[in-house]
Image (cartoon, rainbow, N blue to C red):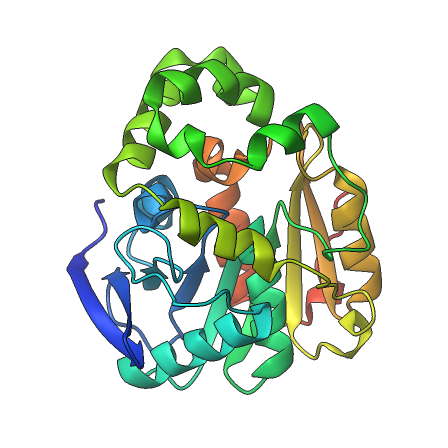
Length: 283
């Protein structure tokens, strides 16, 4: 069944700053799932996940400087971006949400849960890390991540994506082409991409993960060349009410490439009445 989408809108969240937002799914008594995307990624890249979630209510947005959202006049901190997201929730009339963050968006999700714990019910962290004090990925891959060229040029993306992301995208030409098309719809600006990179400077969650109150699901692929699995294991070990689910053979993009497999894990976690630590821990 196709999710019901309310379409796109631009929401003013501060002085000369608007974010592009999209809501999907059917209204429900449960909190909607707020989707925080990766570095340079527009909200269109969530479509496979939203399709797999079906009617589950979700809210996606372009981060400041990404997609159709405005580019801030100066580089924001991760704390500042979390504050912007909290103001977005205010403008949308959402008192409390569940949050799913992938990669860079997982860092934002951690910061949002820390700074605004009353707004975040449950937390899902996918293919992400605790920031500065983390185990880095393949240096050759990280060097290519320093530029937004993969968003600007589809031929370049199709050439480097198998190395950057590995896993299923390396073996599925149709998936590779769909990803390239989605990334070309609303291209990140050079300044917006740089602002996102600078938001990571000096940021780490390792010093306060043990104080996060939210039930948390940590998702990771065991073939991720960008964020090695050990980072997910570290997050799950430090967050008191966390559960770790490993996707065998999963690449950095497993949330998209394996969405039909991963979506039921996410919805089961969001529905569960038991604490996250009581859920079966994948090994």
